[in-house]
Length: 359
Image 1 (cartoon, rainbow, N blue to C red):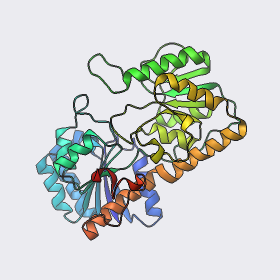
Image 2: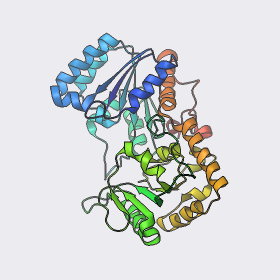
Image 3: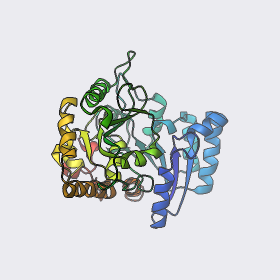
């Protein structure tokens, strides 16, 4: 299967996960050839029309079986540009993956991106809600669930109970509270950090922009996360929830690293994260402290078993190559059989043939 992947990365190469996943599938014989196109960078260099001409030429040479648009940042083409690209690969199935928490009022979905998404045979979203409904109404063929992913090569199992831990608790995330617009969960995140600082003081490490007070360490790039987790005993996470099944990529990154994780709960957590302990998930900032303390108090044997379960779950459910394989399976089924009759969503179980599309 030949794949043309349109990324939202800028500059080119900023997101290594897409080529890593395609390379892994190529080594398995699922993908025979692939190309990753940095849409924002090429549009900035050539303009939208020039980028569409370039992409049409690349498509003619690659002759892809599947074209995948990754995130709305890759959907920068006009209807004329999209028609030109489509004419260069008329037999390819178009797929779309989105991982941003769009909302009708606070973060509306870009209109130009909708022009691309509605031309796709299938859209893979990391939550149900506003965007799933909008894409269904627009005519996108299939709207289903695919969770945030992790690249096991970048985020391996680095955590050990036997290592020296500089901090009992680590939190990674920016302060996104704004006076200009309401961001779901922003106030709860601020409240969580304040409670963490009161409870753990200098035993706490906080990474991200916009914070002040005890434990603040400055910013942390994604590639620095493994080292941060290896130096900490417990991680705590919280997400801006806008729909069922939603969590950011920081959750599977933490699971893959093996660090004991306390995380905000979400609708569908038992289904999406089987095998983890209910004590790891909290409903509000106040109950987060109990979840963290419970993890800190685990025996060495208990915490090692938990760490191994987390890493195993990341490996079996959230690896980027496994998620991309599912997307291509759906695309291939549509391309060859006219519909995904033989494909089931591996995360949603009994929620329907392809999950969100059936709700």
